[in-house]
Image (cartoon, rainbow, N blue to C red; front, side, top):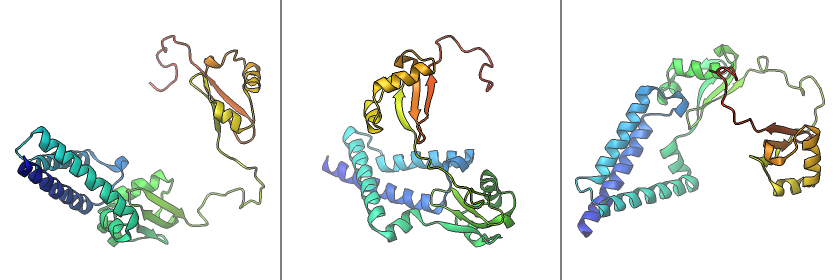
Amino acid sequence: MYQIITNAVTRAIVAYLLLLVVARLMGRKGLSQMTFFDFAVIITLGSVTANLAMGPNNTTANAAAVLLTLGALAIITGYLHIKSVWVRKLTNSEPVTAIENGRIIDKNLKKVRFTMNELTTLLREKNIFNYADVEFAIIENDGQLSVLPKSQKAPLTPSDMKIPTSYKGLTKDLIMDGKVLAENLKSVNLDESWLNTQLSSQGVSKVEQVFYAGLDSEGSLYISAKQPDAEEKHGQYGIE
């Protein structure tokens, strides 16, 4: 039994390290950029890694040893990822510049295995249709693209126009699925009496009729009532 568990732990460590190496060599892509081929490869890698870790002895003790070993390795890797810059770069690499001052850095694209088609797609998602309009485009560790347009191509903001703006904070959730969030209501110095008054002013007689209600930073209450239980008519919401 001891020999079986020792072999299982050894195989799990080898499988984990090999998986890290292969994943690192495959480059980076966000889940949203994965093709069907990429997905198939990842599924296959997972299956092969599991078979390598388990070996021929698919016993309960063997499976438990592999599971605990992989869990421990993941925890150790996560800890080292936080504590060590070297480990962070080794396992997760670092952001790379894809475009600088309108010029595509082709060496970096090859380094992270990004094609021009993939880069173009990510730029279009950022409403960028011309490479020359980009000051910097950086491929992040997770495969996402961060883009800084050139100043003359960036959209105008109120500060550019010298227009004063009011503070916009987060909306405070007050009701969810017919239940009042008393703690949130208290945090904004309001009570259920005020809430019921607001609901009545918008034609809602009971809290149970509200699916969601939230208070924005300007003191306006947004209310979304629950929909009736009647079956939705075809095309009712225009998305079919």
